[in-house]
Length: 498
Ligand code: UDP
Image (cartoon, rainbow, N blue to C red):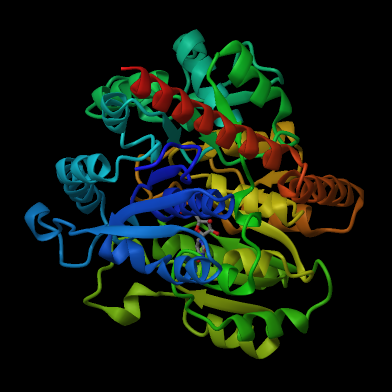
């Protein structure tokens, strides 16, 4: 093996098996390769399927990037063959089995990393034990959480100041102290783990400790979006971090966008030609990410709201809560006749399964996004310059909602108040009236709607500038690569001196 001055740096990437974690880290891996590093992505067979075409295109373009595939212990963990990703688990019980299966991979992954002998490891925060492997090999570990600075700052301030401790009612608003902006939340919107210690607390303690020991955090965001929070995170909380996003803008080809994450359930052509037939800013895109499932009652309510507002829409309909593969018809339930009516009137397009989201959002006919506030969807909406309707459900989505509605002021909340532990459990009911109100506020051409639209457009321009040559994310990425190089050079000269 040559010294790091003679050979390209080798970075190993270890993305977690959930679309919202895997896609952005794979995007970052591909950008590292585009910057001349040798990259190895460790994953399992079914997960590799979702990005192997993109990697093959990169290899044809001359980039040094490879996928190392490990066998997934689905059967051993009590899961069906091929169930290798959280998006394939329809119940919390199955998700927990999947977590265990992923844990079982630890020894093989560690062995593979040792065999690769890389110059750095970039891994999801959930693979907290990679900090120890990195220490053993004397290389930096970069941690990736999949969220933005704002979320990490809110989580920190709530943990440190415990403002919810003095609040009696679940629905009583309180202000999160010491934040750069006034930020209002309720107890009902906080994750359980913030309020009580539970079976996941020990794991969270380990994640936090591993984050502290890591070289730093890789953040999918851009400085201009969350300036005060990027500064707060680095200077007040004191964590080293590099912002390199929005990663969905990093690789620009149409094939990349059309295939991002999974095989789309509709052709790119049918989506785009349907959108071509609509006026600019006239269509609302509705999607609740890769994991969330709704009950029939809630799906019915969304359908009724769409029908009564007369809003043009593309709705990515997920599988119904609690249904499994035994009943195909029921799995993709919609109210009787709804789809036919919407298609005939030209009002709506239904996508059952996976949509080419990034490609759709970039189309000029899209005028807004109704989102569950997953961080990737928010950033993709921002990158496309769109105002939002926010409908958070689980994980850190309520915090993300507040960034959009209270800080950036480019979104209208639909009014969900209750955090859920799982994407596959029944959500609290949101009435058609609430949905209608949010749609007409966000999509209207009145002055407040127009203000939001202008702000969102401006952020979209800043997002694109951030990833261009010389932009803030481009600069931070180059800085990070330089730091890894320095680390490797120091390692090499230390070994020479021994
Ligand atoms: N996504 C997509 N098509 C779909 C559903 C989701 O391309 O039909 C992508 C979306 O563009 C985003 C990711 O899946 O990049 C979802 O991540 P997010 O953080 O928004 O939510 P999660 O799925 O983690 O809840």
